[in-house]
Length: 362
Image (tube, rainbow, N blue to C red; front, side, top):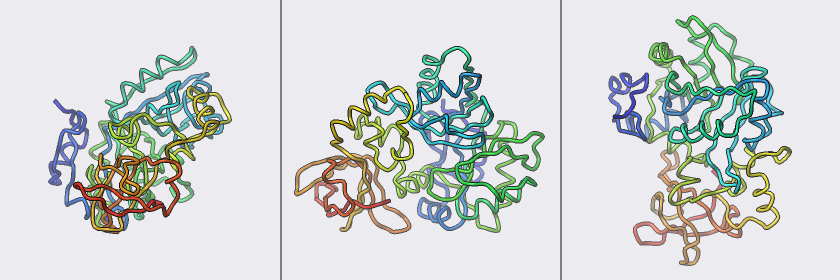
């Protein structure tokens, strides 16, 4: 039986097309994927992302431990700062990507992907030394993502705390209207727009959704489903765990192969699991690179479609869609390094027919 998030009733009330998404009841769409996509790009949208994980790691050795299992340098994270990181196997392949927040001198808060909550938490447990405490609070937490250029104005309406001087990829404890205690809010998101992610105690989750919904009415706030979440992140070239790495079409991939995403996920200034494999890959040279590809003829790339060069298969689309804002086909995937430069002409085989395409920047 799928899990009902704290916002399940909101999905039903708003007419969401609820599906079983990897064991959670979530809506694929509400008013339609193009409408929801444009709402986030132009104004503001509200997402239920409670299927994501919530892991607290703290203790006197927490910083050193995380530095040893994450690709980004945790020593350089200040309190209230976020870092995008990868978790690697010894062979350098990505187990999962995650955001790590330093919420105190010796306390960190991490969000693994939905299907990886159990495996990642066990990975942490298996490698954590003494002086490190781990707690999985995923089943006690509801997460709202508020995304779009009007997100800050909507959030400001439900708190008296100052939100003006707040850089992107920082977090704060905010006292939201109707809550007895401050709650953790991240200035971040998975859409490429300004926005926030609210980590809410389950008992307050629904009431905060209602407060944000009411506050967003003057900006024509929309509820956003899984479909638009996917088109938004694809348009910006963001990786999806289990699809763009570790998936049936992508296979195991390293941080270096993820290209742009790997650039800000990786700092080679510390020792971490998988580092030696990455150093070896750097020495030998990359063979594949993750790229964005846009069609220049009519056609929509889909996951699993072959990528061609002069009629020969050179890769596979790992994520694909029609971008609602441009109405062009857009895909993500890995191609040989020599074909990864912006402007390289390729083809995508769509329903048995090669469609002209070009490597493009998200």
